[in-house]
Length: 343
Ligand code: CP
Image (tube, rainbow, N blue to C red):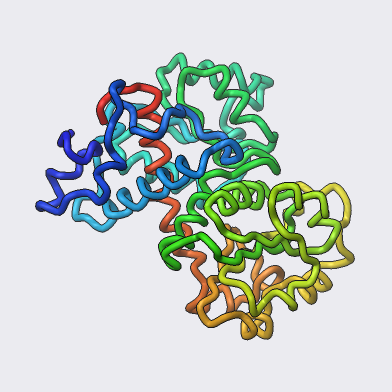
């Protein structure tokens, strides 16, 4: 550890200091100043200051990916279990890579290959992982509250990689990071989140993050998927995408989550696209600098036209890249809070 940056970068930075050294300052216990959480289970209860600290820490970690040696020793000697009970491409690989860049040992587990299939409970599985000295458990689960359930029972750090229709905190952090990096701010920006809000953990976490960071958020979709009572979260509701398009700074399209819907919420996918899909004609009515975002996986031709997804204003793959830095920041801060040790 270099004792300057706190994440062991100075030795490979060829004299270039880490940005914002105060981000990495420690209190008397050795924890990162401003961060005292061993777990990240959601964004609902995070303060604006905690969100800014996460984004600033991610910005510092993003520079690691540009260096010749892309590793830092912040989690050396720690073991992370990447436990995905639901399918994932982006989040699972991103957490694995983030942990490896922080020099942690990584174990990947899926439900089908675990003793959950033999009737073991999630709690027992997690306690066994902890008995094997897992320091961090990253959990994706179909049940809302699963990560919080483990966080309250384990000494290990627990990071929510998506729990049912509840929260997907690191997705929202990478969304906020991408907007801030591209636009230089979040305050005052008009962000539309379009689609299946009712079943979307991404939408919930986005709402918590973006409103706390000063953006104006409008939820857009059919009334069956965007109920009026969501206004209580400090957002606006619209069922008319076309009227909003010229005013938007960011449009974030969501996938229709068939796996969570128990009844039909609209007549057909074609009808959905005709009202709420970001077609080429609709994209032409956006401001020239409006960002097009999507958490993935995308359904080309449904919520977003294929050409629009691949157009210069689309930052969909940039979001994925930024997810790595954001997840490094989350793992780093939670581990430091748990152990109170110098990183
Ligand atoms: N955005 C997202 O969570 O993608 P994955 O399901 O592939 O992880």
